[in-house]
Image 1 (cartoon, rainbow, N blue to C red):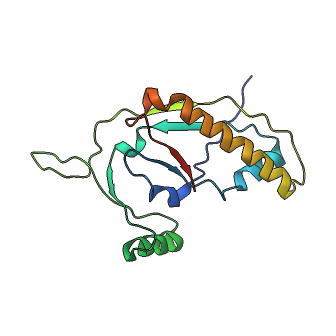
Image 2: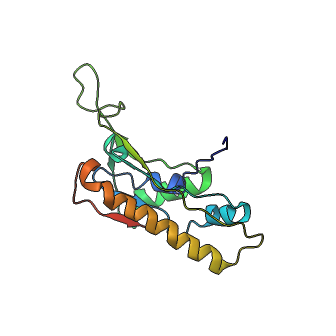
Length: 159
C-alpha cells in the first residue's frame, strides 16, 4: 500500500567534518533520538549506506586537538552547520576548484527493521534497538564494501 517515508541524516553537521576520501566515519554512537522516535511511533528503520560520497571532494582534515578543528566545532555548535575546508576539481585548466570530482555514488538500501510501537520507551529499549540498527548498518557496509568502495579494505568507524 501507500505510505510515507522520512529520511533522517543521523550524523548531521558533525559528520560532515569526517567526510574524508577513502573513509567511512559515521557519527552515530550517541545519536539515539531517531531510535526513540521510531519506538514511539512504531516506524520501521531502514539502514542505508552510500559509497562514493566522500570521494566527491577532498577535505583538509584536522585532528580533534588542532586549533582549526576546535574553531570548526565551535562554529558548528553555534550555527548548526559544519564548515569543512574542502576542494574539488577546477575548470578551465585550474587544478583546484569547488566542482565535485566525477565519482560514482552507490546507495544501498537495507532490509527494513520492523519496530513495535512503545508509548514510553525506556533507555534500555532505545539502546537495544540502536544496537540492532548499528549492526544492520555495519553488516550492510561490509556486504557491499568490496563491490562499491574505492578502497575495498576501508573500515567503518562509528563515533
